[in-house]
Image (cartoon, rainbow, N blue to C red):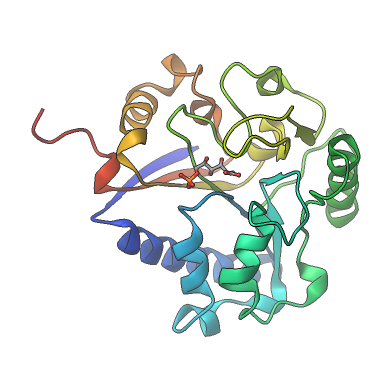
Length: 246
Ligand code: 6PG
């Protein structure tokens, strides 16, 4: 696995850099394999990216017909809830992107969490034609990170960090907002060819510094446990960089 750290001056430039990278990877994957499987992140940081992908110049550059969208995690709410990660991607990107409906694979946050997790694992297995003993090889997984180092909905101290079998798991109510969540497990995230972290915010500075300095010594921070098969890219804006004055 190779690792890359890209610094951007602000969130807008981070979003633009991420859009350029996503389009480049999508076109490469479609040229090589006729398909691009992209896992979207929740939270607010990627919304600028989603908006850019839904408008020129990126809108026409994306191979939407060959792109399949998935989610890394989802709050256990209906898709029209203001807390829904799917709803946020729909409002910023999906309303404009000419994706065939069958290419959108959302997590069913409206189901009771155990059923929602099981249903998504079945959908992934059917899509990848895989059995439960071989994890799906997503082309690109987008991830955010919280100030406590959580990523997707894998939180510090959670027993879900040690999951080795299930593809999709669910959390008890908690976090902000205090909801149960569905989340891909680390074996699935780490089976991806590539992971792109999009991180912005001074409150994440300490976690970013600890993870980039020595991921093996920062495994109490879930984001430090992300090791994709081929490439790991951290896209950071200036607010996450260590204090230049210090
Ligand atoms: C979620 C996300 C979560 C998010 C981080 C960062 O459902 O909220 O999956 O992991 O990526 O909490 O959130 P922000 O981008 O809003 O800071």
